[in-house]
Image 1 (cartoon, one colour):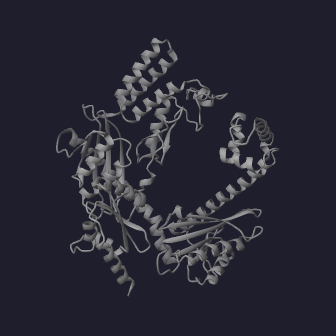
Image 2 (cartoon, helix red, strand yellow):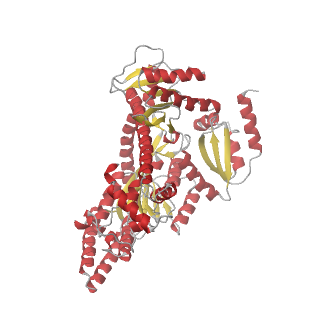
Image 3 (tube, helix red, strand yellow):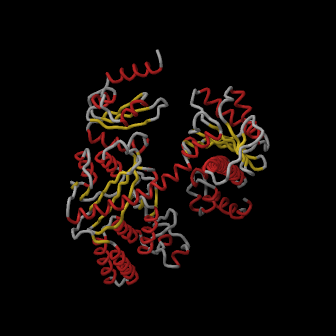
Length: 616
């Protein structure tokens, strides 16, 4: 029986056992990669339709062609399936789904309300940690401008220290002296007053500036009545700043409601742009746009529905009204989900006239312009990634393009702590989850050739043992010597046909096994620049690992020299503080908090590290 017949029989058996419950299904290719995620009222009906219908779209036919297996997750309700689908698309970014481009990279503003003196800063990771998040934002510059305004108005701390209200420090930083910070570190502002400011920051970020101004004005009058004129002056300055900010914001409606205005414009290629106007209390406070990929074979209704589903599963604020320029599929599911987030019903509208229609037209114009910008960026990005990969395959005379490239580098200083790195680029882009690093085990001293042999043998002997896919191309950092060392191992492993090249730094020459003359490419070509990026990334990854090991060795060595500190106490110190630098910064009372460290030992550690700071 052929592989194709086996595959068909396997899928037919699965189809017979499908449940009729709602849920999410995951289509996989022959490598096990998830290529499509979908939701269904009935898993049985929906999944079977992929393999039964004759009137499928081109996209569906292509999807089915690649399906080698599928999996599914049953849920109790269709709404649960709706939520799970959005989360799985975000996690796996399947190639056949409509996807928010670079979804994971969109930043948020984080307010750490769960500590004594909260911080306000940019982050790209959202956790269930008690903090408040605002976003996501497509425009990083907009975040920095917002943070600058917040710092100017509220004079919040910008340091990363863990401050305790009952443990004030001895001296403040420079920001306190130049009136850029209220000085919570030295107790110049109470925990309660600081949290009042943080509450105002959250109102500010939510666009509730009318409510915020009323609160600040009330606080100013209360502070003045209590003759706390310094505090009253801070509130007065904040009111002036709010006034200027409000003057710069466009009034969109006289209604005191929050609105999200979403317009979708589809591009000529496999992408679209979703534009959002954020209206809070009738004022336009900002705009964001998101590029969607995988939209060529989809209707506007499906594309807009998919965007809203993914966006609101991660958005930090839900409006009272959602204004759309196109009808959407699954409107009932979206409305139910938004109501869960908001705590009350959210109105979904498709305005045809009046001020709301004008807002949609404004969003459409911005979407069209942003799509043009993105098309230019996309062409440039394609030229330096997939386009460069295609040209590289032709230059090297390869039968297939080197979609999967693995690059190696060796790092050591005077033969100590020798390490190697392996980086992976797929379709011209780094695939960081596939990076690997190696401690050199069998080589003494600074022998790069032998070190390269060891790491290449370890990597590919393991792939062969585990019957895993080999890369399309190996890139070695170095010239003929390093290349021949690596190629010798490939021959021993019986995979000498695996394409491998070396890139020499000085002249940026490309060496191939058995070829006496190198290949030279102009320095401005995207193909050479791709190889340089892989080589430089392998070097960076190796050096960072080498520094980490060296720092760890020196740290252990230095701590071992302190009288009264053995292996147990050394490990306890490192586990508690995380690094030698943090141990050095610690006060005696902080050192005493470590298990097994007495007051006498804490004093010895404190004195020794300050006396020997310059040694390392």
